[in-house]
Image 1 (tube, chains in turn green, blue, purple, yellow):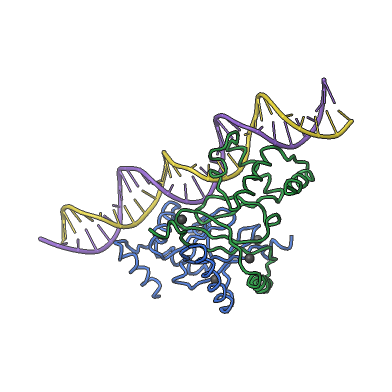
Image 2 (tube, helix red, strand yellow; image 1 turned 60 degrees about the horizontal axis):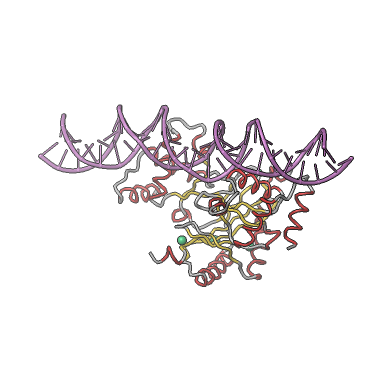
Length: 144
Length: 144
DNA sequence: ATGAGAATGGGAATGATTCTCAATGCGTCG
DNA sequence: CGACGCATTGAGAATCATTCCCATTCTCAT
Ligand SMILES: [Mn+2]
Ligand SMILES: [Mn+2]
Ligand SMILES: [Zn+2]
Ligand SMILES: [Zn+2]
């Protein structure tokens, strides 16, 4: 995959290495296709100590390869950076904390961007991005 | 104000009291008009111990009077519940953490709601609400 | 090989938030 | 006016996700 190519280059450009653990983390997040909490990343995997996972996730975040997602429940989650996966949003269950990717129609996305851009300018904010999440109850939690 | 009326009633309905400290917290948040962190709530105010502030904010949240806002920087912020202030969004500075209220045009809001409703249904989510934030650099941080 | 610097991982430290609990306040009923 | 029951208070301890520390190990370039 040229995902790893990209990762290796970005790290190298700041004197870092794309080690086995880092590649592994990228793989885990790529396969998951949804933001994962640290316990979810580490659970059931050998040779992936918590401290190393945290350290490397931070490292990868600094390199712009990973994004830390702040969820309502207070626990951090991690996913590949949008630069690698494309812009998207999240559907989060307010009961069990599950988070799942969500794409919205391009026209709505464009309209959002346009409007928010104006509003940001009015507030003298240099906009970087927007965050749009749907917060509700997943199928499992909703039928309770 | 009938804000306090509302607050008193909601608390009473579950056997709670609308004490001086609780009224004070509601006032602070109402006057601020933007989500405040706990340090910001407590700073420079006499007779507002941290533990009581935390406890009462949680109490008020349970009563549906206050909402805890999860911001990117990991610190919780608090604001009056939308049921009291009306639905709105936030503009957050990714550098200094400042958060400020933001209202978006009603037509866009409606379109968002409609679209997200469909998407939630497709994912078998019982939607409760959406969260839309603008994340950027405030005037002060942007000019650095 | 070797040296310089990056990475590792076990455990200690941090710090926002939550919990505990003895003391206090308040409302109700006689 | 008491007095009991229960909510509240606040100082400090506890929690626990995350960050730090650091002695050891690994990588890469010379
Ligand atoms: Mn978007
Ligand atoms: Mn909205
Ligand atoms: Zn759920
Ligand atoms: Zn700022």
